[in-house]
Image (cartoon, rainbow over all chains, first blue to last red; front, side):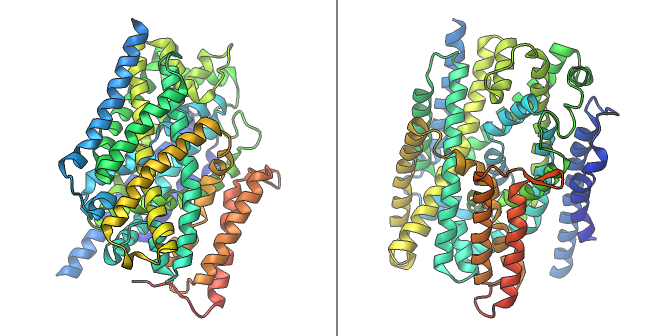
Length: 64
Length: 487
């Protein structure tokens, strides 16, 4: 699970890049590729946050 | 009247920030060495977040983002992506750095390397390389500040005077307050900076084109292909971007000053909290790009002399002078705060790792007070050196600056793997580092960056990192002694 969460941003932002390098369709006014990368940042926040929650849960369990 | 209002606003900012930064030092006249260098290691989550944000989002980050958007187009999007990836790497690496720091009372990156590989010479070597890349970065802040003040004051205050005034102020407050001064001023700067970016990034496209989508449509109509990779450049293509993102993600936290900042965190939870919330800051970098792309349309017929000043010119040509004063002030702060942090880290590296450990036989024989005194006076010396270099030899450090990011990225295998991989060895670290740095310099100075390969282009730092990594792993596996310490 942790490995997947760590890998998602790299897959989204780096590996997917050759397939999203277009201007159309524009989303929120942004060129598609700019929107894609920006969306990747939001997804990264989500992934890191989930990782952090998992870590906290583990810590609690270990403390008990 | 218009001119002087911009100047007055600008100076209120510069002087205000120096006073604010000096307060912690004036209140606590007998600050301990540890308190001064790493803020007593008890910075909580948000304070550490503000320091990190204050350090990462320099004036050059936002001026550069709009300048690249204006001059190069699409390739500028890489800036949007690297932060998130770097923070993901940081989430895994920094808590470890923090633990090592607290357990073994480390202050600098050189200390960490010295501890990991039980080798003082290697620590000193890493510290020297770190200083070599930090100095030009410090000089860049100075030069950017000079430019900003010059443009903001409409040429009334020449660059050199502006640099002198602002940097003497920075030196004074770092001298007095150390990292605590950096922390309190960073809060002001971050809020100012984000507010300004948000406002201008949204307002200017509306003002000139009636909306963000409309603005992009007009740019696409004017210059087809400008808004995707490789945009207005011959070689910054998709492959270059992918390799650059890898370099930035790995290299980001290898800048020596981030080690010191991480040691200042109260516990390993703090860098984790940072990793979650710093990407939010990074989302703001789209706004200066919007300004840069709007500038493509506004200055379609009379190109700007300095692309990096696109943001300032847009504000100058759209708003009254006092608004320019606010932006100039925010920009000046965004040079001064990173400069303060860089000064502090560089002086700690030199005083601890190079002077005391290299020449005085180690810190066992020297009191913390002595060390603090040396580091403090070094701040003044470094300020003078940086000022001297940027006034009289402004092109001397350009090569070091170009190689800076790729250069510090070469620390990644020995530092990051050294904390997690039990086979990592001193010989592997030394061999990988030397080969990596050599390749970086060789490729960059021979104009082989971006590195052409099969019709595409790679970031030269990436090529060096891959070779460095392979050498590090192979040599580590072959050596039996000098293994890293995992606790």
